[in-house]
Amino acid sequence: MQLPAGNGTPFVLSAPSGTGKIALAHRLVREMPGLRFSVSHTTRAARGRERDGIDYHFVSPAKFKAMVKRGEFLEHAEVFGKRYGTSFNELARAKAAGDFFNRRIGNPSGRLSAARRV
Image 1: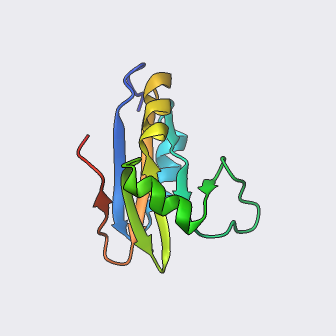
Image 2: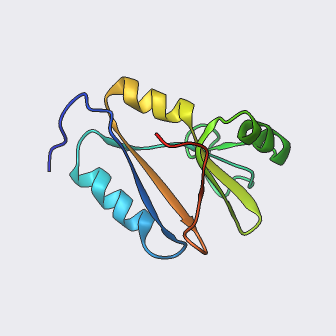
């Protein structure tokens, strides 16, 4: 499937942890040119070969809390004691490039906290 150019449409895959969001997201990216992942912020430490700014934006709990307070997140959630969120800056970057914006959200309950409606 080909995505329309210059759209900048965001979409979200949201489901509880372990339900196959990542597998689905990778398949969508392979099969749909113009689709890209967002780079989320997280308070957890990098794992393996993860790189700051590429896989995640790794931030301290204090910085994450301050970002929430300033309303910088489209959505954010706590998963197993660590915080994850998608910033409005990430959405703006995707929109400016005309890319479709794919954010995978997963937590045990499937719930998230939206900073405000987009």
